[in-house]
Image (cartoon, rainbow, N blue to C red; front, top):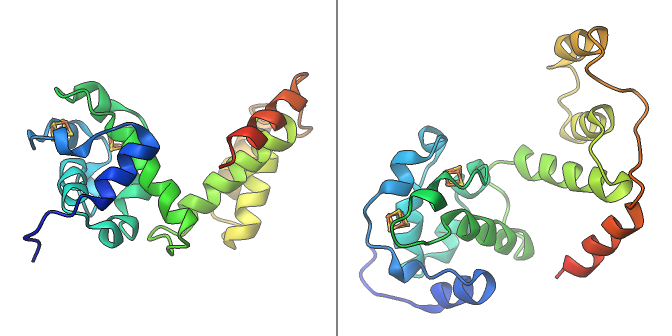
Length: 178
Ligand code: SF4
Ligand code: SF4
């Protein structure tokens, strides 16, 4: 049972994101507008409440922080101007830094492959991204039919292109890695 306030987590979220979960008055607009609420184990307004009560372990181990697609619908709907999506992003970063086993194994893996692809070439190449993700996840064959169809329709370029400012992209990665 949660019956005491613990401001440690709130302060950490505020320091890292600038957002203040304590301003949340539980109107629920974030949760009702979230397109992925059906798949979440903790709804966005409950995330705010648990943050107010310092329930760090519960939040970092939740499915919700990985299900969240950072679409920012919740942020746009919040009457208190809380950037809920940013709080979710902060909790994901904290979970990764603290080595918490992700409740959704393949979502952080896809996230890493996606960023790795951008870091390498400055843009996404579907075959490179999916090749990396499929081989690391071990799920090699599930989308093969779709890939063949996309290739036939010319929707996938086999040779990845590299953006001209690629060095700048790498510099941004280096400077923001903290
Ligand atoms: S940012 Fe995340 S929590 Fe907010 S509405 Fe989108 S999916 Fe839901
Ligand atoms: S919309 Fe804002 S104030 Fe309302 S429950 Fe969500 S975070 Fe709290």
